[in-house]
Image (cartoon, rainbow, N blue to C red; front, side, top):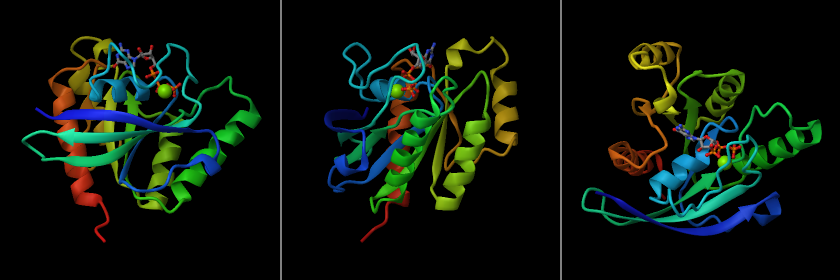
Length: 209
Ligand SMILES: Nc1nc2c(ncn2[C@@H]2O[C@H](COP(=O)(O)OP(=O)(O)OP(=O)(O)O)[C@@H](O)[C@H]2O)c(=O)[nH]1
Ligand SMILES: [Mg+2]
């Protein structure tokens, strides 16, 4: 069993607020409301006392939120890295100015000279990849950024359809460094497997200096 202790480092609304780049970073990306903040809370074992703010309304996370993780556990030893929670895309009622602000912040972050190791790309299991997800995928390809695909809201998927959905999405060309994982926002055995996968992907893709 792996345990992640977390500390909130900072909340970034504009690029001048970025913290010093000291640790490898794993970035959670996806459409608004897909469940990024929920998944981060689940991974941090913080479903009752949340670290990342969650809302049923899309557009809750407006900033880049940096969490420093101290990982312990027999399987992977002791490690430190950062998780970055991002504001989502594809939120229709956002104004043009807000969308431009989102893009400035996110693009500026990905082009800053930081040790961004890979992204966790969250996709709603009920709907599969949407336009914004396809655009993100193309952009991440350009940046040569590895992705781990995580499907959320597996618990809301019609019973008996899961296998068909999974195969359909994977066959649609989604690329993931390890097979995509289906989650349901709860802190169950899936979360422990996901923690291990994240640590292993950091090991595999972190630029060794
Ligand atoms: N049933 C179910 N609900 C979920 C799951 N993941 C997230 N939710 C719910 O979906 C809503 C949105 O979750 P958030 O974690 O705030 O989504 P987000 O991707 O961080 O959204 P933004 O901050 O707007 O980009 C909340 O009401 C969550 O409780 C899941 O796997 N299953
Ligand atoms: Mg959020």
